[in-house]
Structure formats: C-alpha cells, structure tokens
Image (cartoon, rainbow, N blue to C red; front, side, top):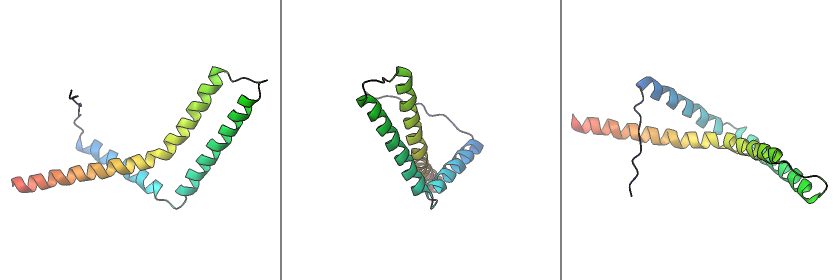
Length: 110
C-alpha cells in the first residue's frame, strides 16, 4: 500500500535560510575540534551508564521513574546534539542534488 507524503512549498527565502543553516551545521562537523566534542559526549554517556549500573546493582537505592526518564532524555539529547551536523550534511547534499536536477530539467526544456 502506497503512502502519500505531503510536501510543502517553501519560499525561496526559506529555502535559502535552511540551506545556510545546514551548511553551518556541516561546517561545524568538519571543525577540527568536533571529534573531541563527540568523544567527550561519549565519555559523558559512559560515565552516566556507570552511575546507573552502580545504582541498579546497589539494592539499597532505587530509581524513580522520573529519574529514569530524566537520564534517558538527557542521553538522547546528547546523542541528538552530536547527530545534528551529520544529518544536516546529508540533507544539504540531497537539497543540492535536487536543485541540480531542477536546473538540468529547466535547461533541457529551454
């Protein structure tokens, strides 16, 4: 069964702003310090996992659902932060390829 995907029409200005944002995120991922940031996020997640494991193994202190939800959200947020530039690079490449296809189509129609 095919699923229709809604596409919205963006103004040229909105497209330009989105492309600039994606380019900025792509540049961020290519900054020489970015790998160190990714490693620090990984280290922080590792430390949190050790704290959780220690508390789970210590039967005297239990996690409340609120604490579990907070830690899950915190870790997911850190992972999202690291993933944004890579996703932006992919979206920017797709956008540029689509623009190139449109330009080629216009040239062939002329």
